[in-house]
Length: 202
Image 1 (cartoon, rainbow, N blue to C red):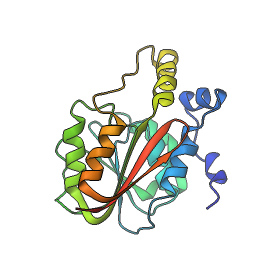
Image 2 (tube, rainbow, N blue to C red):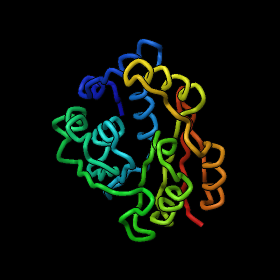
Image 3 (tube, rainbow, N blue to C red):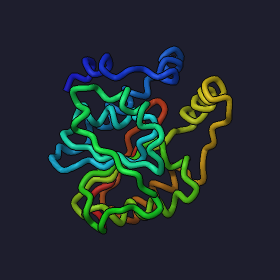
Image 4 (cartoon, one colour):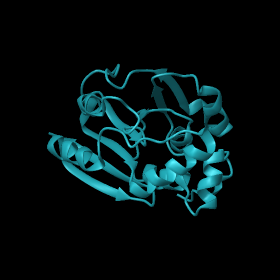
């Protein structure tokens, strides 16, 4: 799949513009990760919506996306990022990652990128994601590497005038938990992130 045409469809945020000026492209990283997901007609679940970067990315590739977040206050910004021709592919739901509103073993594809450092109880959130995964499904969890955290700290100082925290769980811890819960786990390293693909739940 040639992703280049989609970059002009997804508007750049101020953060995207700064990142590209420094030689990084988070949107391209998201596309490279999303393209490695298995093809599916089932809904792809995304946690959390945030400003819509991953939601917009997924909408270019998959026919049905359900994106959830603790608050839907940022939806106006999200709607601006999703290409108009793909808007009907996306639905939104307000949810708490510590108590996901999905039955156990019911989700075939779940994506959670650059979110674990934001939550107060990441281990509980991770266990919830594992709980809802179908044994044949694929769980994708990624977060910033040290370069990513250092770069996002600069972004937050410039754009939001605050600090950017690294959270309460490391990517090494995430990998260990996934390895204990899934038979198959592999990592994908991009300039700002490390992302784990987990499948075949134990």
